Image 1 (spheres, rainbow, N blue to C red):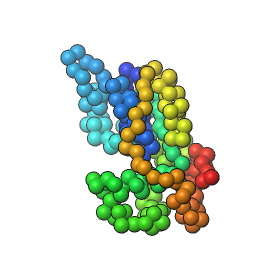
Image 2: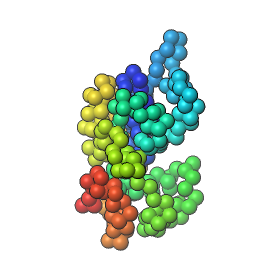
Image 3: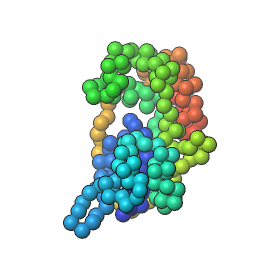
Image 4: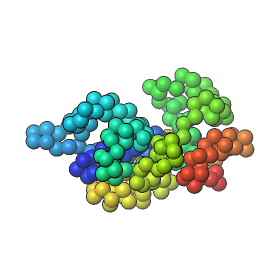
Length: 207
């Protein structure tokens, strides 16, 4: 999550969708400047909810952020997020967890084949990208949803809207073959069924 009062935006960070690149590109724009002080906005919010806000997780949902900020402040901000093809998302997550020794799921996932991982994910630990962006009534809360597959162009759309000039660095990326090569008919169908809400909301296909 990034929030800038100067440029009037809030970024809802869906994990493993170029979030570190977006944060690095915009980090110099998400500070409030006070006389003699340069500190993250989350540490100087003048609000009874400031303590709660300081403890917001990096991957807070739009619903959580709206509730912490309040509807009036949320509505004043330009909100945006990025999403990714669910089949590709799971390949990226699989590799990220396996190589990241600090990830809390690594001990479990490191011994799994990709097929085993997919079965575990859809049966035991399913999380939708849509839940970061929509509320429980199905209302989209953010103003703009960019796509990982069109990241450069969509990020520049955000930059024009918030009035900054920034370029995306390429960080925290996993190296692997095209995502389609990881799937067979069974595992591809498991993702299609489990992530149907994401697929419908954001218009993704396996092909």
